[in-house]
Length: 373
Image (cartoon, rainbow, N blue to C red; front, side, top):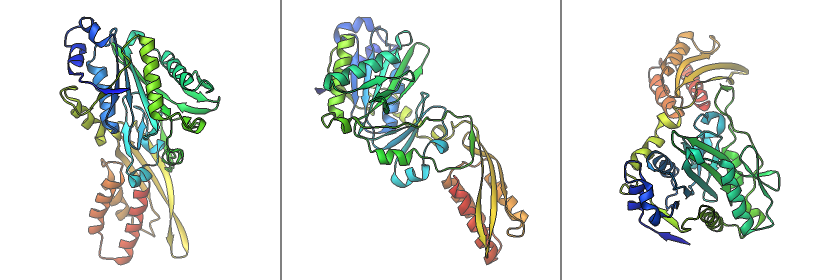
């Protein structure tokens, strides 16, 4: 059963800079189960950061339950252009977030449960947490065939992935978080996690595609609410703590001092895109020139999300060399994104000579370039 509960004093006493947790044992009973009232991916990721940075977890493990409105979440060392369909995400209003843990890309919506297990570094154990989830699922539905793998995923019926894992290990604290597919939009998930971008070469961590399935497809009683309650009950029994799920507001600065600043940092272009490991794009596209088809070659080096080298090769008889060089040079140090490219090309087009045919070719070229970003 979910009950609202003010945790202000609890958190203050558990923070590293406050009274040692041992003096609060009778109140918190050696651990907490929290659930976010927000469905904003940046706010919920900020809660993870805040707990990791500020809580004294010695003898006080924490389980954090959260769900998000449609979002794609990439790992700390991933390339979003490789991992997802950014154009479709912009069109559909799906948020992109980069978490501080490693691992692969996942899609979140209200049919996906996120679970974060916080412990001290010495007690960090992903397999223990996954077995706890399996036990909770079997308690609700004993007929379920769910197993944890060596890759720390959960498989349904030996082949369908219902949970993926990532983690962050700090100096003294650690957290392991994982998903649990209950009733997510599978078709939308597949569309969003299918990158259309060609010619990308990168050392970024790449996701491994998997067959997925919702637990609700197996049993219509396995709703998100039922599953969250089951996991919370199993967690409470295992750690011998109060089984109440305490609702928390990630925007509450009295509970999480400075958390809104953390959430804002997670939304910045510099974090979401700028932290992408260096990569290159080598691709080409065709343009029509009367009855013939011309190939345009493109080579771009990107570092910290910004273009370092841009080489667009266009047949000189179609577009004068000085015009192409002007286009190449204008992109240097700009963000590798369609918004900035649109702005730069719009400015350039205004400087184009009053030659209708030349302007038309330049416009076509600019539109094609935006399409690869």
